[in-house]
Length: 274
Image 1 (cartoon, rainbow, N blue to C red):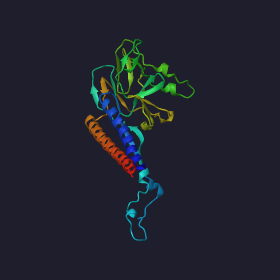
Image 2: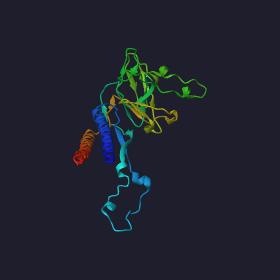
Image 3: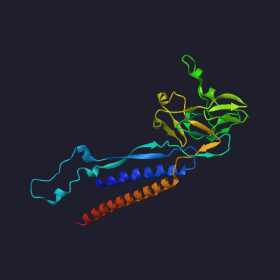
Image 4: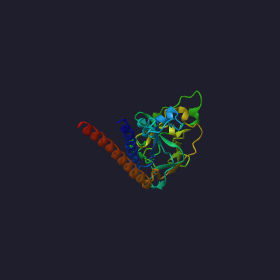
């Protein structure tokens, strides 16, 4: 029953697709969330063998001559990878001075427990020390200045770039300049990447960049809108439709597997009678 592994591989792939779509649906209302999409790969033995000719015998045809599988019983489907859709989400006004939305390809730079992380989720708040933090409590960072980036200067640690506002009301313009009590205290760090798909997703809202060369060195062109929140880029109707379709495909494959199992059981039971 080697043929059984063909639908089994499809069932495993469809189950992972269902899980991915369900996670997208669950985060449809998560600010700054970017949907995930799966890519599948099909392995065909016939392609490895390079079979292109019509395989007909030079003799009188027999029924078996018309049922060549060419290794189809060893075919399989597997998940080739998952990628994140970084398309822009809708900006929604909130009138909250600590809500910030990005319009463009950039990411906020924050300091997580295990180092610097990047996020599009801009519903920030103040902690007890007067630091601007994410809703998980991770400090938001300032942008490195041109002086910091000059050759020979020691680059400040992320811990030294935490945005400190105190008990004041901040004003941040489209370029990310932070003003407190009429005085500029720095620039909100927004980072753009040469290849955002090289980022590794961590949790639902954070990304890790493993290659410093992936960071763009030019001034970010992403605009920061204070008092707005970027919604997820999930189309709930389309995702639910895909989820229903994936469920039906999974159920169809399950019926195929059950049919194989019934054939196997009948074969064993009936043969044992002779």
